[in-house]
Length: 67
Figure 1 (cartoon, one colour):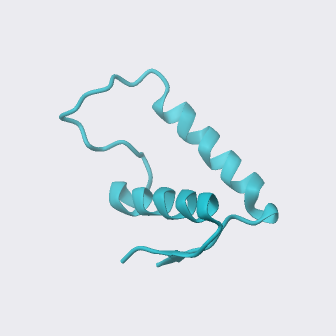
Figure 2 (cartoon, helix red, strand yellow):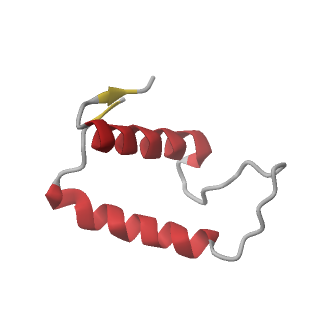
Figure 3 (cartoon, helix red, strand yellow):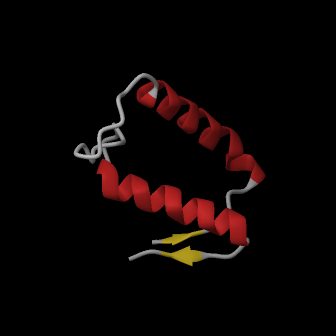
C-alpha cells in the first residue's frame, strides 16, 4: 500500500482515531511478551503498517510504500 501525507481534510478523523487508541491503551500494563497492542479489526500488522506509513509520509512529505 502507498501512504500519502495526511491532508487537512483528513486530520480530524485521525485525531479521533488516535484519541480512541489513547482510551484503549490507557491503564494497560506494558508487557514485552504481549504483542497485541492495537484492539482493531485489522490486527496489529495492518495497523502498524498504517501508523508507520502515514507518520513517515507526514514527516518526509513524500509517498511511502509498504508491501
